[in-house]
Length: 127
Image (tube, rainbow, N blue to C red; front, side):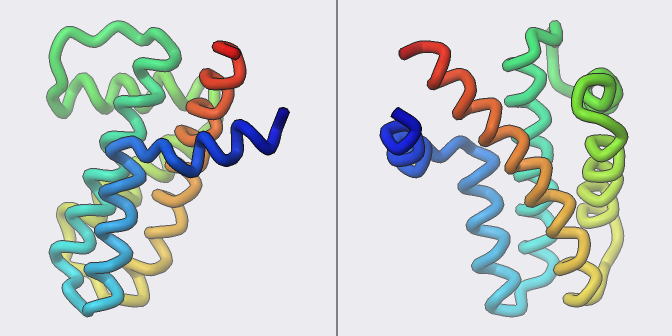
């Protein structure tokens, strides 16, 4: 059964996965500004997905709402969510070196892995 879900998960790509892949491509081409923006967007979409999965009520998305969602999610997933969000904000607001972007990318990657794991769990519940 696990194999079936692994194949299914590989075919399903949510917004955060797409943004992350685009960011990696931009980073490999040396487009640091665009890569940083895409990593931020990947983190933002992962937060939105986790907010949905955890039934956190949101009326509209703005900076205050997403910061509140990050705080709520950190109660379930730990302080790492706060750290990943800090990394995302740094990527979006500061002109960083390629080495630092690569380092902060790892925080975003872990956040996306959490979101993808939740997707996997949702798919497993439905079958």
